[in-house]
Length: 252
Ligand code: 13P
Image (cartoon, rainbow, N blue to C red):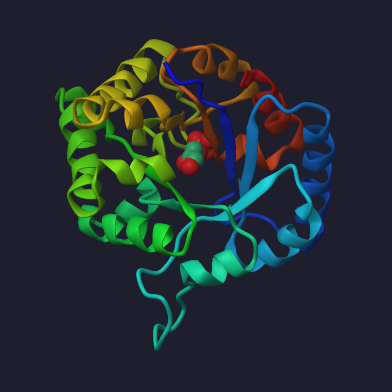
């Protein structure tokens, strides 16, 4: 089995200002210097990316966007392209976050387009998938996750996951304080890897699958100890440097 280097990524969502952000990244950078068992990344709001890029230049912490346009450039008011993110040193970009799917109407095919746009700009997409509470309760978790993955596989092929990260984020666990149990999360992670393995075993073995949804320092250890959980996509807890660094340390 391939060894997968864990990745802990903070999704700051629409939080922060210049003063808070400068302090937060300084502490994270300092804390991450002390160990290197995992890759660590932060995904600030677009407007804070230049500041973060300046503060984190030279490593070891990576940074990325939370969204991108499907277009390369042009008359698309309010949009940000993959190449713009790349220009500011981004390594990653989140695509298909459930907040974008539900609040901004991003469907599977649009998410697949954004995934492709990210890779075309040489960014690593962090593709978010996950079911709502209603879907889980009606036993449709695997169908939903499979459908979300299939849209990307159909458009870009399974081999595209050589240059991508998957984040399993059960919608009912996001921002609710209700974390999936390690068993619940592992079951879905195993399912995701298994689906890819049917098509390409080596891609499945190599792809990092992160868990996201109310991950905290207290729950991270058990979650990250699961065989198919390769890191975390952390929302609320990534806004506290101490909490975020504790999660990073749990990713061994
Ligand atoms: P919380 O960690 O705040 O639940 O958010 C998870 C998430 O949506 C990360 O993308």
